Amino acid sequence: MTLHAVLWDVDGTIAETERDGHRVAFNEAMREHGIARRWDAQHYGELLAVAGGLERLLADMHQDGQTFAGQWPRNLTQTDQYQLACSIHTRKNELYRDLLDKGRLAVRPGVLRLMTACQQAKVAQAIVTTTSATNVDALLSRMFDPNWAGRFAAVVCAEDAPRKKPDPQAYLEALSRLQCSSQDALAIEDSPNGLAAARAAGLCTLVTPSVYFSHEEFDDASLTCVDLNHLTGFSSARSRLVTLDSLRALHRRWHHA
Ligand code: XBP
Ligand code: MG
Image (cartoon, rainbow, N blue to C red; front, side, top):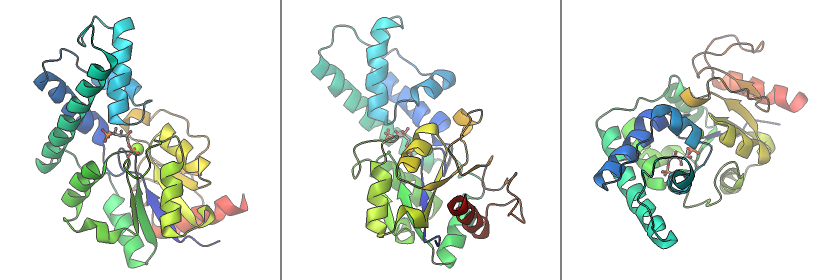
């Protein structure tokens, strides 16, 4: 088995986009819509169990009736609730892009280095995310340039795989576009939902937990490391950095386990 492709999750893996990006933009969009509800950093971590920003808004609206002091408008029909959520979500994405344009969200350690190494070695790379194409474009345009997509053999976003992680649909779609077997690829993820999706697609998975998941146990992961510049507990590795060689060694070990 050879490592032919590296599949990258986006939110939490490429950058810490959730707490300081999506959450901040959601709160501002809610304020602009005249909604009293705000998500503090801790509560947003709990909401991450729901994949997808629109789904997260709807879940919070439904919970509000039972738990919170009516911070969402009362007596909305289901259709009105859905339309409100869509409107907030659309505005959230514009505000999220503004945050990126202002340079508020840094790429996580080692990501650029490892992506460049894969590209130089002609190992195919794919983007596999439950966020929208617009949000991916906002992040990767800032990270590289507007032609960033040329670096990836496949880009699978929410529009391409509507069943969100932990469903494996996005990973299966990426593998199909890459014409690559799950046996010959490796995923890099940050969250329990992401890991579950990658594992359900049959992938060897390296987890670099994002801030919200730094205390989680990722028992199903092939390996977990703090970030791509801090590899520990992996005897095959010569360096602390997650390199293409260490990905290949991890992939080999996973096959022989
Ligand atoms: C993470 C998500 C996304 C983002 C928000 O995606 O679940 O929903 O939180 O983006 P991943 P949207 O880790 O797979 O990149 O508002 O576009 O859903
Ligand atoms: Mg993620």
